[in-house]
Amino acid sequence: MAYCTECGQDHHAGEREAETALDREVEIARINAKRDIEVARVTAGMAKDIAETEAEAEVTVATVEAEAGVEAAEAVADVLEDVVSPEPQEQPPVVVEAAPAPAPETPAEEEPEPPPVHEHRESRSYGNSSFFGGR
Image (cartoon, rainbow, N blue to C red; front, side, top):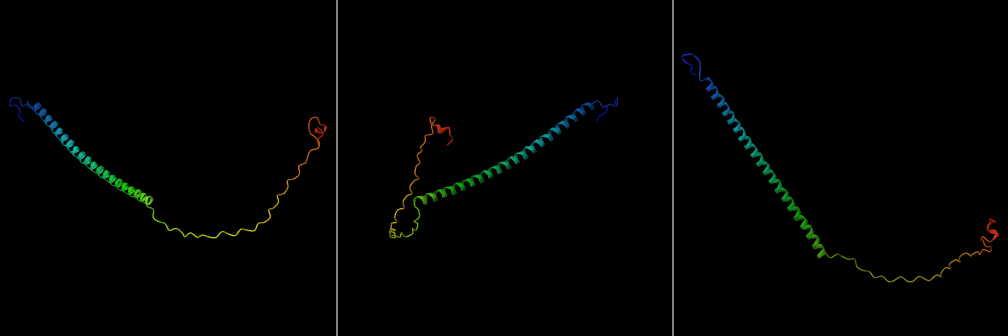
């Protein structure tokens, strides 16, 4: 700080204040840049971790699907093998028996006769007087 020897005033104070303000802005920009770089590193690390986790999960899923496919193919092969060449099964021996003796014939039962049909002696028509008689 240099004061004027004639008047005692600091004539360059405004320039120094502007320079100090500029230095502060530069320092703030430098701090913000460091912060942005650090955030980018953390984000990249997280993205890398997420990508690794997803890749491991995809490998696990593919492994499980492959094992399930192999098991299904083995099951189908076993079924087809059983169909093509079935195992011989023990069959019970066949026993031939003589036919039973015919039962003595019983006389056929006579069917009962149907009841006799009653003939109406009187006609129940409009022309007959007994029609309205209520008989």
